[in-house]
Each structure stands twice: as C-alpha cells, then as structure tokens.
Image 1 (cartoon, helix red, strand yellow):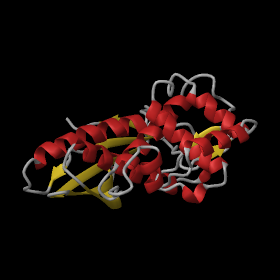
Image 2 (spheres, helix red, strand yellow):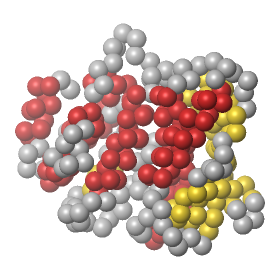
Image 3 (cartoon, one colour):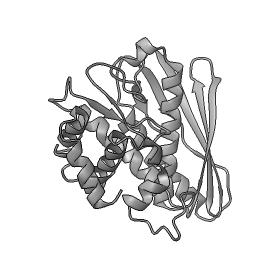
Image 4 (cartoon, one colour):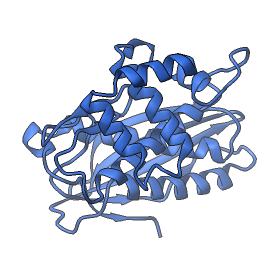
Length: 260
C-alpha cells in the first residue's frame, strides 16, 4: 500500500470508530514524539480495517514501514520488525495505563501475531495478560558457550530481559504464588539459542520449558530481539494457562525480583 493508497484508505475510514481510536492514540503524548511507532501502528491498523489482514507479514512491515531493501532483506537475519513490535506493544500498554482512556476502543497486538485486535468497553483484548498475582524471580542467566564475547553478550541480555520483564509485567504486592525464571544461553558465531524454564519455587517443579533461536551478529540488537522473544513466550504461557475469568483482572505478575 503506497502513500496515495494509504491516504485514500485513511479518508474512507474517517467515520470508523476504530480508526478514530487510532487517531487518539497517535496524537497522545505517548506516541506524538515516536514517529516509528506511529508509522507502524498506522500501517497495521490501515491494513486491518481495510480488510487486508492477510498482507500483514513481517516482510511487508520491514519493506513498507522500515524501508528495508527488497533486494536483500532477510527476516531471519534482520530482527527490526520483531524488536519494534515488542516496543509497540509496550507503548500501547503505557498509553492504556494512562488517564482518560476508560471505555474507549482498545488496540492490542497479541504475542506471536502482527495483526491488531480491537475491543470496546470491558471486553477482553486478545493477547492481554492478566492473572492472579504471582511473584516472579529472574535467576542469573547461564552462559553455555566458549564463543568470544559470550559473557558480555549474556550480561547485556540479562539487563535487557530484566527491563522488559519489569515493563511488561508490572509489579504487584499480593503474590500467593512464586515462580523462578531460568534462562541458559548457547552461542555460536551468528546464532543464539535461549532455553527458558519456569520453576515453581514452592515445589521446585519444572512447570514449563521453551527454546527460542535468533540469528545475527551477537550485538545489542540481537539482545533486544531475544529478550522480547522470551517475554512473549512467558506472556503466551500465562495467557493460555489462565481461565477466562482471571484474564479480566488488571495485572499479571507480582513483585519482580531481579538477579543480584
């Protein structure tokens, strides 16, 4: 969808309550000074509301929003879309946590998807995570590699993951359950694999296990992408594990404890 087509689509949607909700988000203080986030949200919502959900792909976003060169753009190497989608989810959560938005249409992007979901009033937004409060403790990350720079990479990943967990799963004090998140990282040149384990701290039982792989240079961008993947996996697990009645509550994790 080129700029002329986008302008035409936006004009045709002027009376749509959902598109009006998008405009309120874009003109808010949360988005007004974030042009990349605004462009990404506009692209996603224009395609959704124009009946073009099937064209919302990582490749299309990379080309049309982030101006990657179609001649050599490879989504398995360049994580820009996945990283920026994680940031967009966080910024939307920040916007809806602010004043003056109660009762307005709510936009969310479920983890593992690039297609927005819009709900009105108090209906559930697909992909939102809420639950009985729990205490989440992030254990120090383990490095399972002898690659040069491995310890520095994993140390940076731990910092990025701690920040994202804190942002995505806001602290609450009431915490009847406690879980420990353990992450071990295997590295090869151009390849990082994170094994994520969720441990019931009361019984020391392993309750969940996943792996995520990322390819690319072992740099800050890869740290951000892998940390976002781990947060998405945890969010997906707890969303699936909850009964629908719990999903309607307002927050998820209890007090987040970071590695010392």
